[in-house]
Each structure stands twice: as structure tokens, then as C-alpha cells.
Image (cartoon, rainbow, N blue to C red; front, side, top):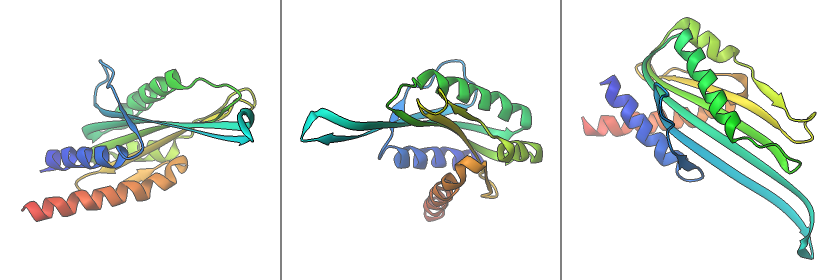
Length: 178
């Protein structure tokens, strides 16, 4: 049943992210990586014509969803570092770049206590040229499918409600099937 939970949660996340995010190709050689999503947003302000631009601000988010039976501290560290490296490859700071987020979501049957502690303790923030070219925050969340527990780091506080809502939808669909 837990494998079914992870598979149905992956499908539910795919539907939820498909509204605003582009689905990206999964790089080869990354263990546990089940899905990748990318979001790009550019806001601009013009005066009279598009030739006279007052300002422009880009916001990007790169989401990496990992699926595994058990999340240990060592598995978390390896996947976190891989998600960070993949996300940083996509970030190209320039003066119109405002912010980028790299988000790692872990769907697991069981989360070890030390891994949950590491998820909550993760703090990765990077300023580009003293924030003149924007910044990057790393968001991390882990969902324990068997108990429904969700742990997130400080940067991903808003992600907790999103994951909880999708988990409840996923569980209600499975209850209807049985």
C-alpha cells in the first residue's frame, strides 16, 4: 500500500504543478529522482511603450521530487546536494533576476528522526552580487506517506499547506477506490 501512496501522491503533485510549472526532463544517474518541474515568471513595467521599460523582475523555481522507501540522513544529504547542483545549473543571475527557489520534495514511506532533523535544519541562501542580481533560497520538504507527517525547513513553510492539501486529496481518492 505505501508504494501505491507514493505513486498516487506523485500523480497528484504532477496535476498540481502542471497548472503553473513546466515538467522538465529527469537527468540520468540521479537515484530516487521521480519528477522535475520548472517555473518562470517575468514582471515588467512600461511607460507608454514597451521600448521604455521602468523595471523588470524575474522569479524562477526549480522543483525536484524524490521518491524512496526510507529517508535517512545520508540519503537526504546526497539528494539535497544533487537538487542544489541541478538547480544552480539553471540559475543565471543578471540585473533583472529577482529571486530563484530550489525546492526538494521527498516522498517516503518512512522518515528517520535524524533525516527529519536535517530537513528542518537546512538553511541554504545565496545572494548574487550583494543581491543586486537577486538571490536564491533552498526549500526542503519531506512527506511520510504512512503517517501523513510533513516536515519542512523555514524557507518552505508555505509548501507545507500545499503538500498537506495534496496528501489529503490523494488519501480521499484511495479511500473511494477501496
